[in-house]
Image 1 (cartoon, rainbow, N blue to C red):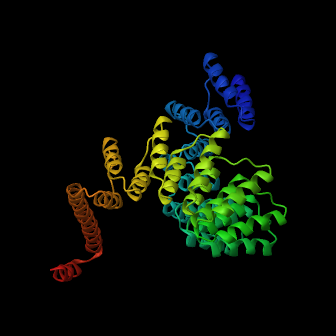
Image 2 (tube, helix red, strand yellow; image 1 turned 180 degrees about the vertical axis):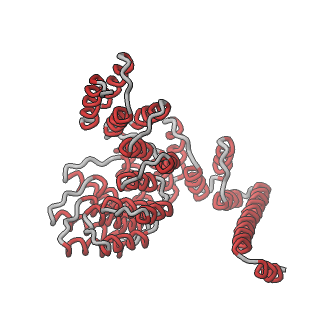
Image 3 (cartoon, rainbow, N blue to C red; image 1 turned 45 degrees about the vertical axis):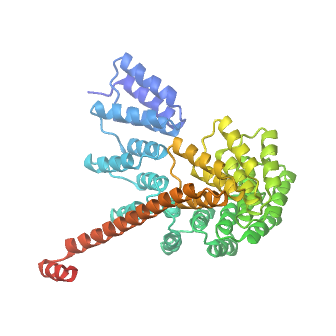
Length: 461
């Protein structure tokens, strides 16, 4: 019995849709096949699934994939890969792993593309342990990891703040005969950046240049961020000049990272200079830029400048965020300007932004410095109404404010609440420690034989 000519025609059209990312046309073709009672086969559905995936229609990709299986058709490796990539875009690692298991159960051999897709899901879920396990698994199955594989594993290690493992993967990649590229180095530098390993980040930047690999703006952004996390603001600023000298144009992210680096150490003047420099480069500061500059002014006790930046932010049609207001309130607190701190708190509520513990903490600090005990108590009531719990620092500030206002009974009451909180905190820590010790003991008992169990029991007793 020959092949249905209609099926052959539809199959060719679906394959063209797959190559051209024409997911909408692919779905229309499947509907037309049903209308004409042409039974779509596995390859036809696989093409439709792939078309949806290439068109970045994740939910549709998975829907067509499941419809295919419901009709008793076995997906091929391309369909599985497309479905796993859809899971990756939706940050659904458990589903991606489930599909990987289904491939084996259904006799479809995973390939390098399959593993790369699952590894990408691990990266987005910051599951570096599973990423390393999958790397070993694909080697055990006789598959050869490529540069994309290693780049993804390195990124997963970086997402999990495992910079040493990221560096190890870079060296393993080279040992396996693969040449690291700019993406590899960027991923490794980013891993260092998350942990503030600025020396290692700069060393990797130098290594790139020695190898003839041209850094890009992403490279410098990661190195500058690493310097910021490592409290090396001067190096962050110098790196901007270095990249310009090499013909690499800084972007908004570059400047934001450098301004944040200055802010951590209260270098407000340099933060303002960098804001002017980025505008001279034709770049428009965004909300993150303003927040970083306001933070720098707060750390440098420059309340007027911080408040001026908030007003300029509004003038530039940028909506202040929770971080904006919290940081500006902190700037007021550090400059003993409690009334303006409360005005900002009221303004953010009018803007339908909900204050959090950090916001209230800054406002309480401002009022305590201003010896405004009544305002401090009002703020504590406001926290309670929102279901927020004051921390020990807030209780300390409240007690000091009440004592300064000679509100001795209130101070004593606050002291009692603080004592209760300290006891609760202590008990919670002791419970966590006991739980950890029991878990360790259980692990030892599971690994021990009968003689070891008896010896361990005697030791514990």
